[in-house]
Image 1 (cartoon, helix red, strand yellow):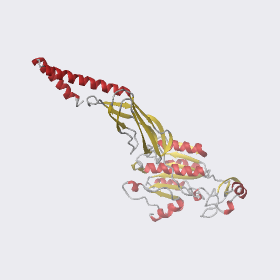
Image 2 (spheres, helix red, strand yellow):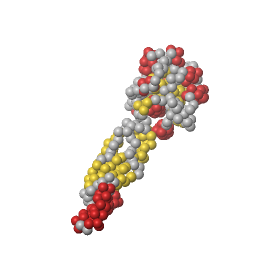
Image 3 (cartoon, one colour):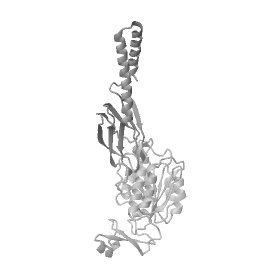
Image 4 (cartoon, helix red, strand yellow):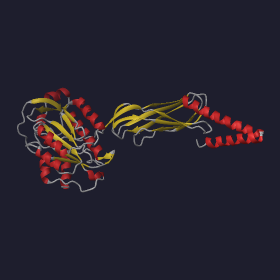
Length: 403
């Protein structure tokens, strides 16, 4: 627009001058410049209608931190030269800019491959693409908007959690603990599983070990279940920071990691979130349950209005004798801790996972954990930069030092 306005003004002035004076050179220049404008306009329209842009984005399901590649192809199907073409991608992935500029000969094409990393969970599409092109004289630039394409689901990162979860807060369903023998453990063997470093030698099932060639442990039936019920705090205003370094993203990644580890050990896992809908996923096992939890976590947001203390009181009493509770929150209000202590029972220690908000820039003091709380609950404090590799029992020492 900027280049052709002065040119059209010159054409008009020349035409007026030629009409007044009758100078042939003025007529010739006016006609030549007018023809140039027409040629540029036609050239631009032909290129716009003949340009083909294809992209091959990734598809399916991915995980935060996973790398991906994408291939772009630009093809000029016309018999005219494409002097310049700029590709701008509007895919909302931080740090991903696959666009570039190119020039194409008649019937020419170019292909390039870009690399990116999924840094945000959620359901994403690729695009739209803005393609800017024009004629050789730069008089009629055009912008083509190509729609979004492809659809991927990006799940939260699942990080290793060591030998999590410790048996001390599962009601003794796995047998002896470092706090003494748990009462009322039935002697019947219900099933077997791979040997863990925390298992005693008396738990090894030798016939299965001989058959498989690796250590296999017995699983005992108990009057208490080893199921886990994870309570995720998605209250509005609780979480701080900007993704991916925010308490919300850490909390969601923790829930994904904990549920993955527990399901891999054969435990049943359920999830209750304090979001606006009050999402509840009943206790289940296996890959189907894992995908059900991950599908929710992929798009979960902190939209809830109900405090996590209310959620604990509501679901905690109903879970007594059915397994352990895991509360994942960034709330420094003591009410939820008191509620979690209240729903406990003898021989059962629940786990409080605190994503420490001051390490993410929140104002105010660090939440202190009194000795009485450490005696009643297991604690795991996660701070910005932690890789979730430490187990809850190892974290107890660091938490106690800040109490």
